[in-house]
Length: 251
Ligand SMILES: C[S@@+](CC[C@H](N)C(=O)[O-])C[C@H]1O[C@@H](n2cnc3c(N)ncnc32)[C@H](O)[C@@H]1O
Image (cartoon, rainbow, N blue to C red; front, top):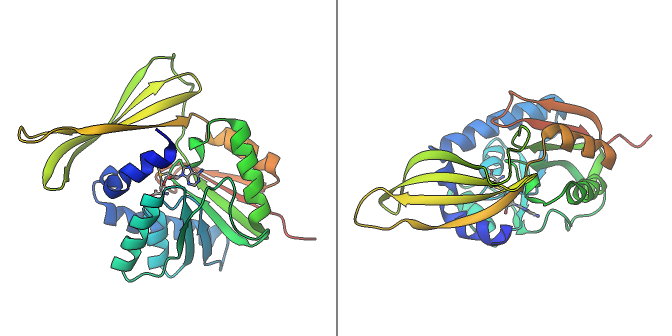
């Protein structure tokens, strides 16, 4: 299953990864607002290159940021568009692969990529090429903010780990939602499973995608190789470690 097909399938249910998606939108918006104003004072324009269904962008738009968002998944962009309209928020959105952003060079004030979207790329080389592309798109004196999972050393090939989210209601039915990770070395396949909790309906077919288990420290090194300066890794300011990097001003 491609990353795009995974998120297209998941888009209508993606909010279920949060116990209360609206509360998470508000919480993440507040946390990102604080980070942006601390590291990019006065800056209120961001480009979210992995907008998904809008968890971060809706929260920032609600806080009067000028947000533009894009994503590989058409289904996610459609859902985010619907969610923005439903909340009366202005949030221009389009479909784009963040490896090749359709924006002018040196035009993006702050580029945002949250919730482990970058490690969907299959190798450190692919991530470095993407960070070089982002560097070219970001304005001098601008920067980027990335949030991602932190991983320890990968366990042996074949190790299976379950990550339960708990009980969720979908279309009036109760399910148990979990991710099942199957380790393949430096990367793992993750299956998103929704198991029916009541006898009168069936489990939903699992959907699968993969992640490279690259660490924030490794991505920080790649950011530096791409040209970004002034590494900041912040571990307790967001629900995941955050990397903030700057593009130096033109001398
Ligand atoms: C875990 S979701 C996070 C979405 C969003 N940031 C949120 O928290 O609601 C990862 C997102 O990255 C997007 N994505 C993965 N690879 C991408 C690529 N090459 N270009 C653009 N988006 C991509 C997926 O489509 C998905 O929407």
